[in-house]
Length: 139
Image 1 (tube, one colour):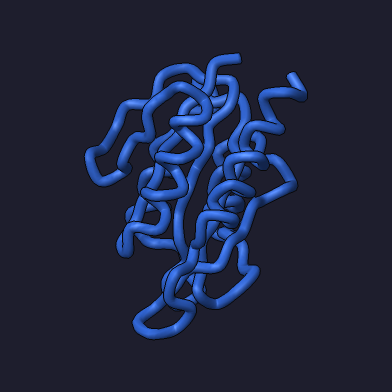
Image 2 (cartoon, rainbow, N blue to C red):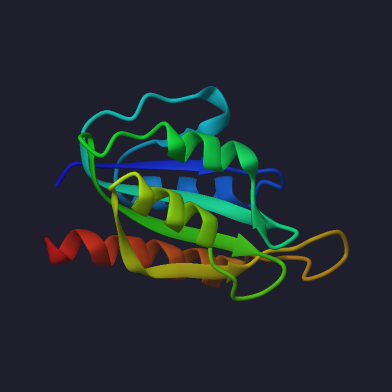
């Protein structure tokens, strides 16, 4: 199965998660800030954070540029200090573009200023990796 991992981060949390997933899947994590060209993939892992309970506008712009002819399915991995929130706007935009999005989304605690320092922790990152790897076993 052909797969890719992209991420966008302000705090470094999403990068840490994406790189751990990428290492476990023997690939590289692509930073959305560099405007990576995602080729044809069966599965695209999108790792991002929520800021003020919202997806970063740059993430939404990136998703708007994805082609349903190239991306068969997307999986979302989210980090947020606000708790178990999901990337609803990203999910909606992918669906609007005709890109299938798995109903499951991994959400882990992030930190903000002095709140929840140390998150995502190693255990949460390992769970994100296991979650991501489970999609490759299905196919």
